[in-house]
Image 1 (cartoon, rainbow, N blue to C red):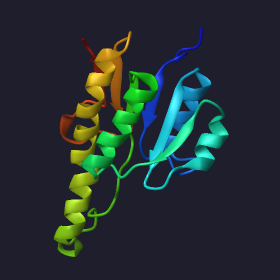
Image 2 (image 1 turned 45 degrees about the vertical axis):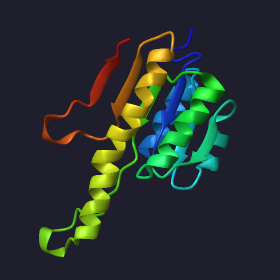
Image 3 (image 1 turned 60 degrees about the vertical axis):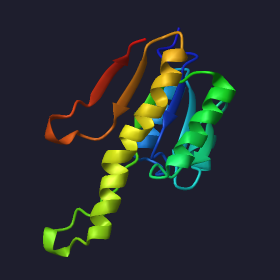
Length: 155
């Protein structure tokens, strides 16, 4: 049996062909997972490359109602979520301090810090509903001692 056979996975920030999100999605799909790939615009080319049953959805990870909507669809379509990959990120606001505007810094905080928290909080109820322990991971090196793998979500 494949490593991810039958598991439901949501990967954010998956639009860049050859990018980290697309590569993670490809590995999950190759392992038998049903993968939902997301980005600001639905990454249709990535989903098509993965083949059925993958699908693409547009998702602004900074929009709480959009996040709630995708998890409502996941609940309706699958009743659970097994894997969440918080890969969406931005480099906006990473210029030298004197060149970074407050708006750029706010965008960076929203995408890189608040969105993974919001997504993980929305995912936990669906992970608890699943038959297996879920996993929420960050695909980027984690700053300030944050774990790269948040580990299993125990019921």
